[in-house]
Image (cartoon, rainbow, N blue to C red; front, side, top):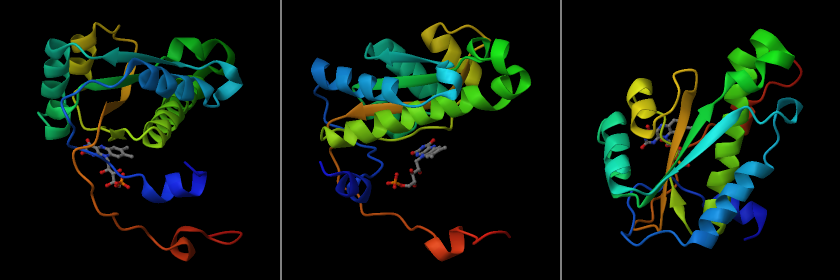
Length: 173
Ligand SMILES: Cc1cc2nc3c(=O)[nH]c(=O)nc-3n(C[C@H](O)[C@H](O)[C@H](O)COP(=O)(O)O)c2cc1C
């Protein structure tokens, strides 16, 4: 898909067909995440790919039983991993870079999913400890986002955006 078209047509998809995501498409989504920039090339994040129904149920419970979590055949869980960045960047790595690394990797994954005709939604509302428990993550990892992914079963309208003139200050506030 042409890049501008990709940005224009991407939507949060919260209802999915039950059929699984093809392995080669999931691989391409993960390759896109891996292509994202990161502070000092440290890639201070981990990704867990979940397809097991029991683990998906546990993640859905951790995310307050949101319908998109119940419907998706696959999920990617993005964890910030401060230990990968603390040695070089100290507090800034721990408090900021690992969150940014995980976030931009998730954004790249979401855009590639759209490019492949898949649907996804960025889920940020969840209980951290329950997410960790669902996938057996160490307590030093911070869950940043869950990306349920599947074949879209809905076609939502665009949501509102601020005007660019409102968003952007020219030179200073
Ligand atoms: C940080 C963040 C957290 C979000 N958390 C949730 C969530 O928990 N549940 C949900 O259904 N959507 C969630 N969303 C998706 C937004 O609601 C959605 O991106 C926004 O309404 C814009 O719609 P669009 O993605 O279709 O352009 C989240 C998005 C972001 C960026």
